[in-house]
View 1 (cartoon, rainbow, N blue to C red):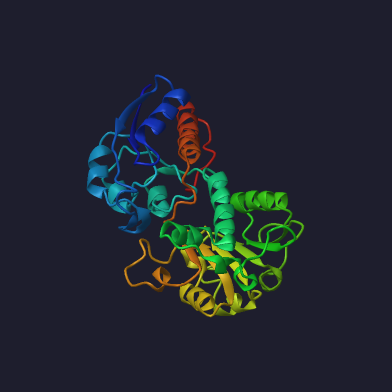
View 2: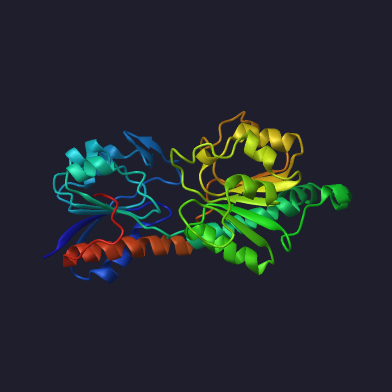
Length: 334
């Protein structure tokens, strides 16, 4: 029996990647429709009651007519979409978490929602390390000076140079798939790694206050939950050693960004590198745009070709399980 599938990709996890993965996993058993979403050309945002989605409810409802399975990255699975899509039974989100899906409404509509954990773990870990090195060696700032025709010898002054990773203590707040990879990379540099994560029991696990007090470098890898919201504020930044470096490639909700700017303005922190922010895109006039020794990238730590390919493969494998009547592996709904 042929299953009608809507492939609702975007300009990162492209339709062709999703469709090719489906054809490999369930050859000859899928009738594929396509809808291209505007992300990342147009930023995601809140749509209805879901977060981090493309605002395409009307287009999605039309495309889902008669469709049993949808594979996507940014399509909004809202109650409105569910109510208008009675044939839908499986909604596969090719992301580390299905934040763009109303899981309670999906369960009530008997629609299973799956996701793609670990798809961007390697890319995010590599980006984290790049950000840590860039902030410590002030690579963007020195490049900008040279590109502007200025040779800054004062960067070589003792008080202006940063620490080395080898022999330094690096604290990782969160020790999931990304944190574990960052730890392995840091050990290759000769760093000593501390971990704060209440859900794991590993060597080097400490309480947050001890981690902050002992670490010259701190990197955030926790999920955004009510318990972790604002977990790094003014008091926590003050507990870090003077001249230390903070990296956040996880979620903007973990950190008080005004307190971060204060710590950089005062010179308490040597530097910081952020890939995520409390508001995205960063609004004009934000302190983040003028704070010294702050390196920023626009929420692209997980962006690699391999991430997109892995994402497509993970969701296609769950579609294949659905077609064969097997239990879904990465299911988020009850």
